[in-house]
Amino acid sequence: MEHMSLTERILRGIALTLVVLFFMFPLFWIFLMSFQTNETILRIPPSLFFEPTLINYTSLITGELQTQAGSLKIEFMKNLGNSVLLSVCSVAVALVLGVPAAYAFARHKFRGSEDIAFTLLSFRFAPPLLVLLPLTIYFRQIGLDNTYIGLIWVYQLICLPLILWIVRGYFEDISPDIEYAYRIAGHSWFATFRKIALPLAGPGIAAAGLLAFIFAWNNFVFALVLASADKQPVTVGALAFVTASGIQYGQIAAAIVLSIAPTLALALYAQRYLVEGLSLGAVKG
Image 1 (cartoon, rainbow, N blue to C red):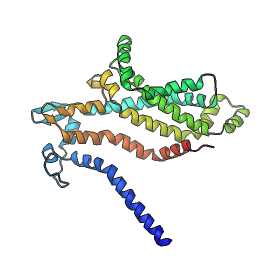
Image 2 (image 1 turned 90 degrees about the horizontal axis):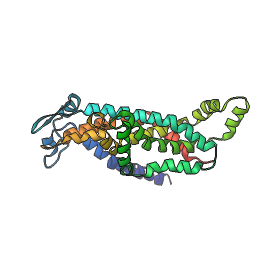
Image 3 (image 1 turned 45 degrees about the vertical axis):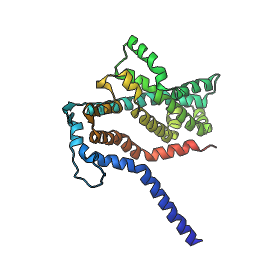
Image 4 (image 1 turned 30 degrees about the vertical axis):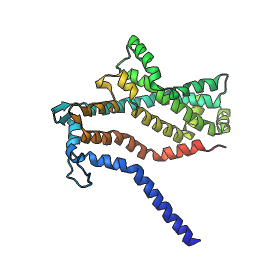
């Protein structure tokens, strides 16, 4: 039995290693591409051995994209800053609005509550193209087109339903008896929500906020249609690397590395809350 157990562990280790290599190899290859020129990337056959260069990162930081047709101005760092601003503000607004709403849906059952909650969730199901045309018209009429506030508002279609439904499940997993006991002691509803419900659901709220941030960061269609070049996030700004003189693969790879770095760093920092929050949401009494 001991021999079989050791063999099973070895086989599982090999299988896990193969799975990790399968999913991580594209990222590893993109990381290598970011240190190569177009000539090195396009050579046949490809090779893992090359002379690394920082020209791709230098081009992104300085805003000077070198192509065969000459120098081209790009605003990648501006786009990167736009992504940070839009994602952080969108998630912050969604948390302020969604967490109390999730608590209300979890604790106070009223007529039509499930219909309202499902209507909010349906915003996540609807394809973006379904709402883009009316949004574009309305935004032009009220002066929100091509503004950060308008984009943050539109991003609530991404963040708010996600946070509302995920956090609602965490609040439902918390026994209401704890809150009742605190209320009987003479504390208000808001004090109970702030001092009891929020700390207990903290890991779940952190997990929902992280997932909403990733979805907001990766959004492409809304910013493409509703914003001009100076307010577009990095997902749209990456289109600048497809030029008339060719596709700048090295700069694209460097842009991918820089664009996924914030979300990767945030996920690594908050992985404890993410795992704990998802585990909390999966446990039913």
